Image 1: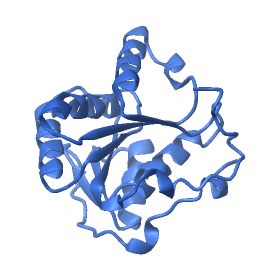
Image 2 (image 1 turned 30 degrees about the vertical axis):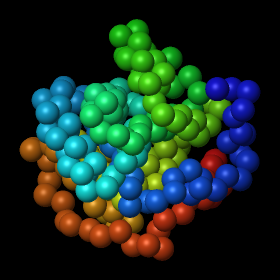
Image 3 (image 1 turned 120 degrees about the vertical axis):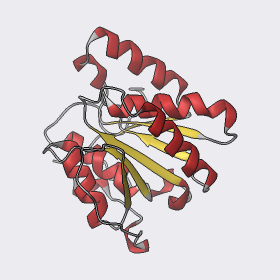
Image 4 (image 1 turned 90 degrees about the vertical axis):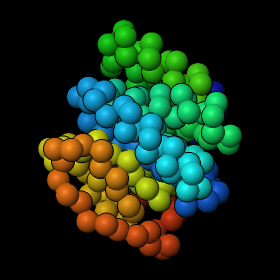
Length: 195
């Protein structure tokens, strides 16, 4: 991954990565996700696929992100054209995971149709850049959001402010307003978010 990486300071318009925003969904959820909604997650991916969504973006964090990526991979054989894009915030992210989760991350990364690595190294704010990328490149956010603060809270709020639809699979989560995509929010400039 390292030889072709761009510097995190290099201006990079990423809206060209995804051809049709309406055919893309992203995932965001808590790292403490325990698998209790795996069936609902697979069902939701299947419903979105039936509605024309073909590409799913995973932020590749432990918990809900990896479970969601695995759900896409499980359905790929029965859903022609279904794609998984692994959006990795920085090279070496998995080094912060347990050995079990490192192996899981490696399997998902190897099976992904595309890997987007947003930075060569960790820096303060790199996860927010990843979360902003997910929101900017999808029309729907599938979440496991219980209402607590953190990265998922940030991403859900960002999605709602950007006019994205948020499907929260967490039954204990807050009721979220229904939003519709605002076409003017379909391109994202990472340059403005880098430190």
